[in-house]
Length: 173
Image (cartoon, rainbow, N blue to C red):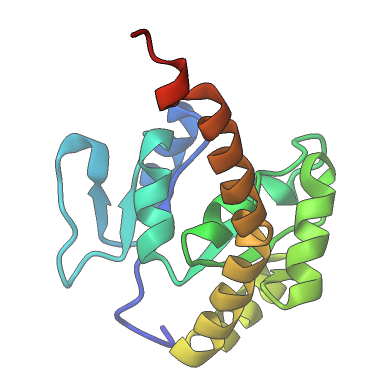
């Protein structure tokens, strides 16, 4: 209601959850588009449902803010936040991120991620990040964290490649 042009992209962990999400959207009067059924969102679409996890990279690229919902559920362990951060999305997450705690901590310390504990704190965080400058600042910080060390990795790969490629002295005469 705060920004009528927002689009909620739902990428559920399993197809059954997608069916439940579609039913909940219909029950609440939200206009839904099913990406995996070949539908494309238009200016009236409020919810985009994407059941195929292989499409997440596309959605991380277009979403200024990503909420990693599995992190609200105890026992799930959370989802790797660097996937969203490296593709330019600010990260919101819940308290259950044990499987990726180090990554969440690095992103939070850099100002690239923010914890939410319930629907009220999620709504407040999204409202605060509607301003493009806020989301962009977090996304840039996330990019910095996710790509830290990339120069060193590239240098090591060049050295390994040089060792593996036959040079002129190694070629048969």
